[in-house]
Amino acid sequence: MSDKASAERFGEVVLPHLADALALARWLTGNVDDAEDVVQEACLKAHKGLASYAGGNARAWLLTIVRNESYAWLARNHPRRIVAIGDLADLDALGACAETGADTPEATLIAKADAAALEAAVTLLPHPFREVVVLRDINDLSYREIAAMLHVPLGTVMSRLSRARRLLISELGNNR
Image 1 (cartoon, one colour):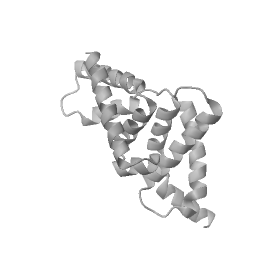
Image 2 (cartoon, one colour):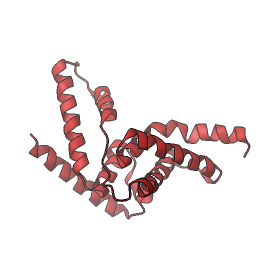
Image 3 (cartoon, helix red, strand yellow):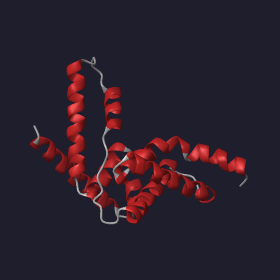
Image 4 (spheres, helix red, strand yellow):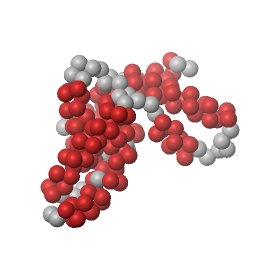
């Protein structure tokens, strides 16, 4: 593949999903700076692997690379660290877009409080549960895509997601 064709293919397959890649890396590494390093490495690996990319869901393909690179990066740089997550600023933006009512100061304050409570609840989830919640509810991957990414049966994804949601509901209910 020529350099020009490779650059065009990279632009078509990888670039549209960089925001999702950065968000996933941020959730897995715990901060934006580390996430940027991970995404940079993942992009290099994706560029090298473009020739073998056979099509399909490019977003899931890139997020799989980001996930694997995140864990490799964590193993190299923080082998004993418990993975924490960053803020939910992306969810604030999504919530603002989804609102149908008028933006009042009270509604904005409630939305920020809800986002902070959700962030805290997601942070408390055990890592396997947090991972499926982020992949499904934030990155909107299908159960099959998550199962393939995590190399687990479809039923495991479904049970982890169900349990994670129950834990979130319980934690959010306890804070009210």
